[in-house]
Image 1 (cartoon, rainbow, N blue to C red):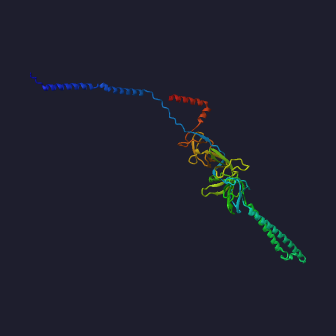
Image 2: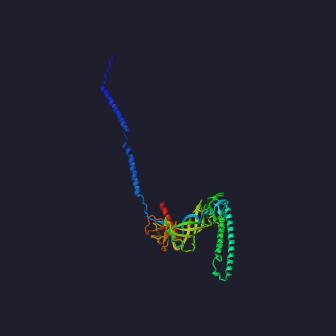
Image 3: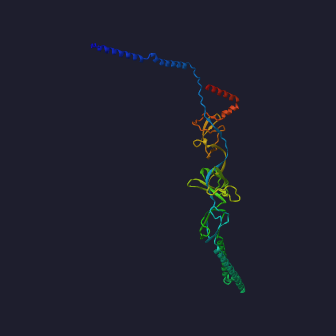
Length: 444
């Protein structure tokens, strides 16, 4: 077998190294990117920026318009003095003018009651509510009548005897004036007369007690409660029922100290009636119910607890049960609001409360539309207005709009005033329309 020639190991290793180097060079050559491709985007951005800058420099600049500051727009009203009749607000509960507890003045069993003897029952004056057994009092009446007749008979007898004694004394020839009183039987006569008077008193008492067995209504009344019923025995002094009068009711109205001066109230020593009309009302289910009343008296004292005065208003026939009344009923205990008619004052200016600031400050505008800030004297206020008797210049008007930063003498614009000027002057109107169109074109 022929021998294999020896291989040069050094030569083989050099060849393999050269092959690896060639492969590495080929890979590096494939990864390298030309520089122009890298710089091209930056060049485009730089060129575009330069073009944009040149266009901005060469572009025409917009014309600057002068800045116009508009004066605040306000609503105004004239200040007109007028005669104002004030109304005083109050409230109170409807109360009966008279409440009574009926008391029995006799003893006995209740033998009869009226069909209306129930809570809420209405009785006319003099109508019988209930009756108490009167047999005992009928017997007492008969006995008193008999005693009276007996006393009267005794009196007649004594009168005859006295006359006879006087005639006998005259037979002696002496004056009657000198006769002793016993001889004329004058004491016996006086006793007989006194007996008649006593018997008459007993008869009258018996009649009164008999009449008191019937409990009658002392006035046009409504029953609020009852303590007895049919068959019950009552004694003298027992409470039978409670009633109140319905011919008229009263409302006690509190009046604040500052409002008293605006009511036509008389002094406590003056007897003339007050002529103050009062409207009473309340809301129920969205409907307003109202009644007319009048102030009948002023209590004349100040309540120490709440420092208010009280007047009393009268409502005639609150339940509408009398023939002369046609209004809706107003029940006892109803809480009502009231507006009392007060005094009428002349030359008073009514200012809406929303136009009064810090208690007594108002904003006014003159004929040049300049603001003036003034303090006024407030006569009184109600829920809507403040009233004053101050005198203002004729060119001043009241500002109704609230100003954020009011400054004296600042320029203002009155709402609707510019439109009226344009309607009055057609030339100004056309000029304003052209200016408006020009403004719209500039905006486009």
